[in-house]
Length: 171
Image 1: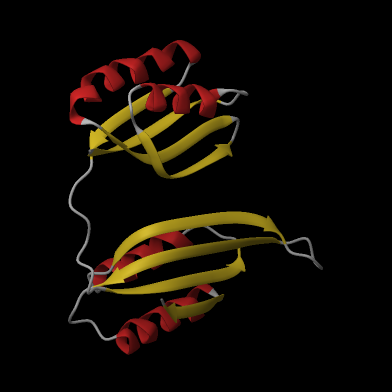
Image 2: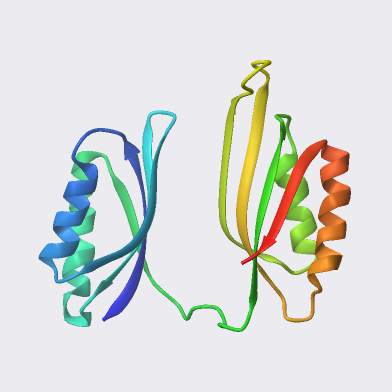
């Protein structure tokens, strides 16, 4: 089996996931993992499927048919996964919403060679005040030579500057 990573976006409407799943299954594919969401009236997602090598070209053609439904699908072959000995941390930032939070966090992580493997963000109203809160959750992979304490210290400085609460846990 060959891994394929699919990205998709289009106007949201009922039946998009079923249309995608139908094409994957019809070509002997197996749906492995996915993240999908309704964002600003659009349906957006990423997923990983595996498919027999002999069916890959036919699946690519079937996925292009989804353009008639307004769904743009890009399929790329998956690569080798990350090394299993790497350390994974879970980060969470929560604070009043303002521009630049993701930029500051991602910049600090990059400076230490940390890879963001998964990032989820949202903006919502605070329960008591109604002010807008921004929250970010990330799963990150640390380089072998980076001490978690050094990363924590740098992120705590940024959290103080941004006036956001930081939670950091080893996974």
